[in-house]
Length: 416
Image 1: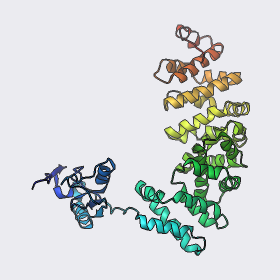
Image 2: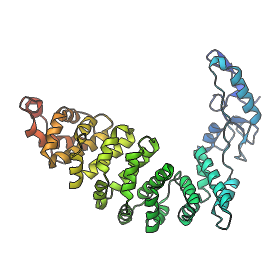
Image 3: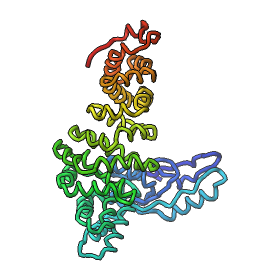
């Protein structure tokens, strides 16, 4: 038939998949078949990608797509599911029934209901919970929700319904799933009452509320350009204590660790209030949690450590922790180039302030690590920090160490 692509059956572990079960675009078994206006059926993810890249024709018929509505083909999906069940012996797993994308009309109605101050409490709460479920389902749903000015509506509920804690915390749970723009961040950060409210919520009885509060604080700090506004936020009473407590006591929750580190790093970027991080116990907590973090969050933690080492009280607090120097030495060349750079910077600050830290670093094997770093493909900034640290520690090497060897003598030491 002209204009129609015939897809031959695909052989999979000795099993032929019927061609009409496969997406004409990806040639893979369809998981969420949808029919377009031309009558052709595709897997939802494939046809959405096709349209998203600027295509406006049907991939099979090449006819123009006059309507971009994708109608779920429930009959075909059930046939595919039945076929999967019949062929489980071949290692085929039954595809799950896909969740349908959010309907824009329904999203608009839910937002209207949630924001209706004159409406009864329970319908408003139910609307927020339904929005939360939709937002959790997929990026596409979040995009649909966000396109209806949801962030503005949710911000109003979070901070206008503080008297009704349930509505406020439910709206907060939805809001943290979206990236705020600069004006939205400023509308929160510039209002002291809103910042104080978020700071207070860091000590809420619900773990989820505490984590969501820290997440919104990090979102607002990251999206605010004004140094004065960031300083105002980070100066809020007990904001450091709340974030550090999440890291210290909720370490069994992966999301708590991830959000806690990101919020603390964002707070530590504000130079004027770093002393508050030290007072809240951030140095010991960062060292204690470093081994529990994944690559990206370990980088943020090490960046926060280096930032706090730039103030005297931070240096003293880190030097007082028995594991600080050994962990920093061990981190060099182990996690990533960024992590190496931050670790070398923190060691440089510590060793510049304390001979005890110099001796600890030498005992932990920092010489070998630094020489390897200088000869590695790491960043130039990391290498410069390593060279400066080598120069600083030169008098601390034992007589029989590699520090007095020809290899060390030939190491180029250059300033920043």
